[in-house]
Image 1 (cartoon, one colour):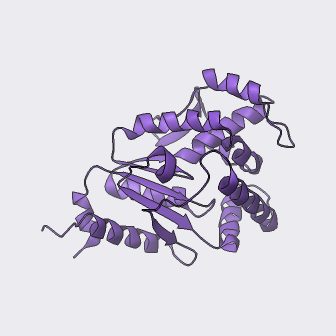
Image 2 (image 1 turned 90 degrees about the vertical axis):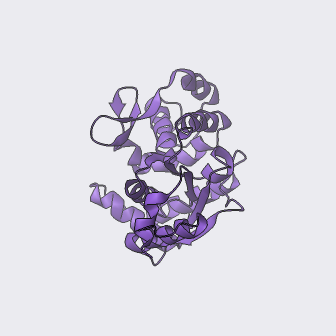
Amino acid sequence: MSAKRVLMHIPDIIIAIDGYSSTGKSSFARLISEELGFLYLDSGALYRAVTLYAIENGIISPDGKIDLPALEKALDGLDVHFEDRGDGWKTYIGDRCVEKDIRSLEVSGKVSPIATVPQVRDYVDKRLREIGKRKRVVLDGRDIGTTVFPDAELKIFMTADLDVRAERRAAEMRARGEDVKTEDVMRNLQERDYIDSHREASPLAMATDAVTLDNSRMTLADQMEWIRNVIAEKFNLTDRD
């Protein structure tokens, strides 16, 4: 049986991908969406966009202190969304594409504290649920399968060794021209892991019905073969040709 061919018959579902930072959730989710013809939504991009706005408008200080009243007021009129202007779905604040700006180390260092704020999580979750109503979507984040879409038909929890994640993240940032040290990236990941797992609002956790994917020693090609087999088995798909 060809697992790849079988995916042509996949039903209208939501695929929720959660897991630790820099496990390659976004890259994996994008490939899945391309292969299945699903819409890909990067929930982390929305949190990063809110964080970028907070940084640029003095709502979060350099030492990470958040002006909660100012943040709550800003959310009332903040327009953070996904948009496709002919070059793929990207993250926007109003009419400004911020896809590159939200990937900086400064934003990475402050996104977890911003994401702990219940009002921010409600803001992002509402936007994700609106789009998710259409089904045939792939979403990745920290609490997609536990909080945003607890009824998602397929849930995946991604993990990888910390040193592997740090190397991947550092390489990605250097490819964008940023001068970073792997040890600084690793420290940032450790801090984010702790904050994400211990926050009061929707902490990072594996859904009880999720399938675990440890991709420490896997290529993207390996991961795609893995997901094809998982989908084929879960939805009892067989080669109909």
